[in-house]
Image 1 (tube, rainbow over the protein chains, first blue to last red):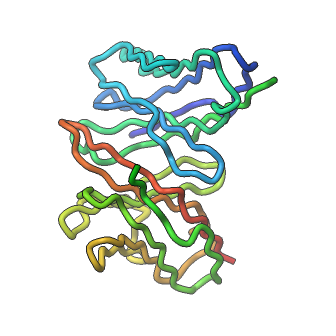
Image 2 (cartoon, rainbow over the protein chains, first blue to last red):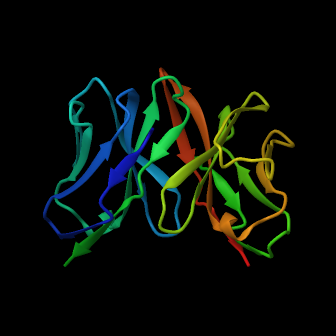
Length: 112
Length: 115
């Protein structure tokens, strides 16, 4: 079945890099996503990667995809206090691209 | 920048009552969705809606749930007879197709508390 797993908490010092990891089970996933949720706000799409790519970089964000191990990671360079949020890993399916499967979310806490 | 809005932000209701959660999608979007997140659990897909009909629904979306787009701008989720386990954050999303990908934009959510 479809499942997305990620660790629940991560603490990082301001200025360091944050790496949030995720594993997924369905090898037919077409797109993999990272969403950010700030307190009281909705789910904001941060970035996504197509399943035939290994890496995508967007300013401070780097997404790495290891399709063989079904492992996705999000690296945030130079982590700032404004990066404090819950980060959701998600996937969409090859034949039903309009349905998104989410993980439980990783709460990123920034230490001063 | 256009965004999805949801009302109310928090709804408290008694078990057995009907609730209607409201969403205003982004105006030129054609695809509409409801998801929910029970506290401490994953965000779960409930239903997708396109061309005035349900295109897919999950096994959570049983006969107690219904969706409607009554006036071309609002998108509502109705729960006919709420149960304690319906307590959750309900997210509406609207979307459009970008090439092969469906891009979804989420609202801030409605927290439903069933007592």
